[in-house]
Image (tube, rainbow, N blue to C red; front, side):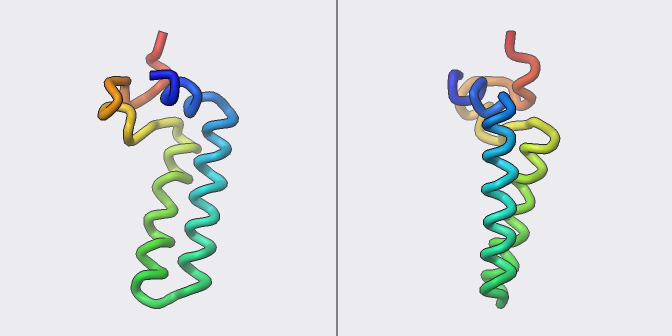
Length: 70
C-alpha cells in the first residue's frame, strides 16, 4: 500500500511520465514492429502519470485511483 501511496504523489507521477517518455523514445528509435510495440506500451505510464491511476494497485489491494486512499 505504501508503494501505491508513493506513486500517487507528484514524484511518483513524474517518474511514470518520464519512464513512459523514455519507452516511447526507445521504441521510436529502434522502429520496426517491436519498436512500435514498445512505443505504444510507453503511452500507458504517461497516461497513468497524467491521470493519476495505478494499474498494479488492485493487485496490491489498493484502489485503482489512489486519490481515494485515506
